[in-house]
Image 1: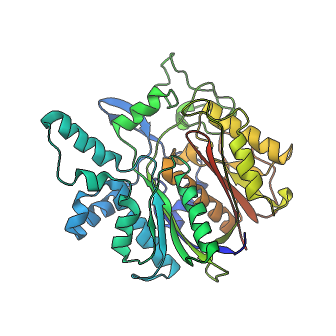
Image 2: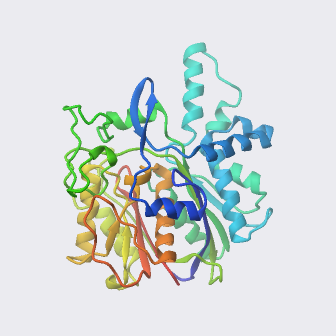
Amino acid sequence: MKTKIAITSLASMSPLGKTPEEIWTNYLSPKTLISTKEFNGKSQFAVEIPTKIRAALDALRKEDIKYKALDETVLMAILTARQAVSQAGWTVGDAFGINIGSSRGATQLFEKYHREFIETGKTATLTSPTTTLGNLSSWVAHDLKSTGPEISHSITCSTALHAVLNAVAWLQSGMANKFLVGGSEAPLTAFTLAQMQALKIYANPNPNDTTNPQPATRNPQLQDVEAYPCRAFDFAKTKNTMVLGEAAAVACLETGEHPNALGYITGIGYATDDLEHNISISEEAQCFQKSMAMALQNTPLEQVDAIVMHAPGTLKGDTSEYKAIQKIFGPNPPMLTTNKWKVGHTFGASGMLNMELALLMLQHQTFVGIPYCDEPNPRKQMRNVLINAVGFGGNAVSVLVSRS
């Protein structure tokens, strides 16, 4: 890292809430936020944003006639961006770059328009402009009246951390000194869930279904498997247990040291596995080994105190990432955690939620573990936390976040 990159704010809306206080309180609770919801008449596991946040999105639609036709993914990005910029002390009309992406994009609106086309043979006038990938950053820029570059992208589940990589490149080059980065995802549709079920990676909401039995817990005090539908980082599970959640999370990045910095980005890494299958990742996640090694090239391994893993709750995804960590850190890895047992997998926003958890743990000097897993060897203090994310095809990103 040629130039120090400060994280001067981070805002999110997710099943955890949208204020730092309620988000931290929810993290300290051992309860999952996963529940069941009906999709096409079938009960499925999902993690929804709270009702009060949904009300805020509805209010945003009424602020501007142009917002009425926008997908929920875009509205979520606009509200979180407003919050992040306000917290960082940036003002409307400032010159800063924006890079916000999504894995699925405007999936709710796209499915609605496609259904109407199948039924009527016609489509609405605004179908194309409201479902295009560029919707995110361009509408956020419109709302904030910013004057910097606007970039939107989709790199599946590593989308948000790829936005961080891109911003760091701009900031280190001197072409910008402020960047707003993140991801937004509203994937809770029947079609999206059906896609995950077709891949056989989604959790089964019926524990009595012998065709897809739920795994046993490793903690004898937590025998109720329904308490934790997503068994991320549970290596005793015998079935895939991924669950989808919705969220948006964005951060303000600035060059140099700042008194209001939540933390600093002190290492970045990226790599891609050789594809053997459309959703493959190698047995020992070579992509993660390379991305973590790159992010840590200037940091002694013993100074990494925790890792917020990608760990989506799938058999191969969890295991391969853990093997990669063992390859890099040996028999004494840092404290390991994930948040997907609580909030589900939020696809393109998940990497930024991982960063949020890392910053909160650094701020409170408290490690947030996984209730059904053994406690890791505690560290005396938390100075550096590594964050991982990977998308379909083994597209991995690792970011090291430090207190100073």
